[in-house]
Picture 1 (cartoon, rainbow, N blue to C red):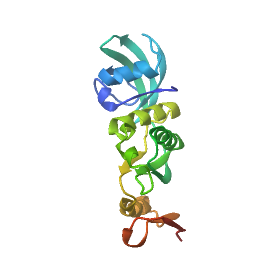
Picture 2: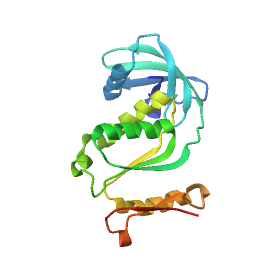
Picture 3: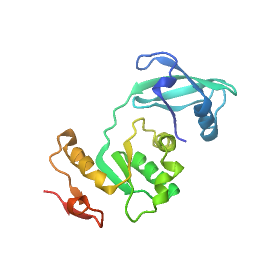
Picture 4: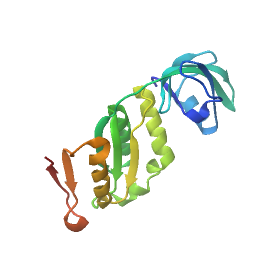
Amino acid sequence: MNSLLFFQNEIVRQFLPGEVCELRLSGARAAYVRQWHSLSEGKEFPALLHQYGRGRASVATLSEQEICFTGRFEPLEIERLKVLAIVGVSRPQTVKKVIHSAVTFGVEELVLVGTERGEKSYLQSHSLAPDQILEETVRALEQATDPHPPAISLLKHFGELRSRLTLFCEHGGRSACKYVLDPGKDGESGGGQGRIAP
């Protein structure tokens, strides 16, 4: 990985931008770090603070129960692409690739949606569990060295997209969407249609 991402609740105490802070990982988070990062006491590396910024951190202590770090972070604003990516739920490995791509490309929002012709069992996949989506998102953020994730949601039916599209088009004062999806007359299921908006 190109960096290690920390969540704000892993900070031991509050800090000001640029100040040294202490961070502590245990349980599943410590296991994740051991699996995906090569760490040793004293090692320094690029680090991210979730929804805050970038910096550097180093390993203070490393034990079976927990890993303690010191870090220094500066706030970082990254404007995400004004893109709402809508993708039909597919096989688990494909879903992971879609999440990774959405994060690294910097889209504003990703919606995974069940479709009439899609395999229904995919909606029950463990890869769509919130903790699995979060883990895949974290890996992609660490690869892209980006502390700000896109919004990711799961809809079981295509018809649920209509209100979401309306809100997205109005978000941030944008006057129109460039592409509008039409699921069919009166929201009936069937082949979707698309049109370019003015």
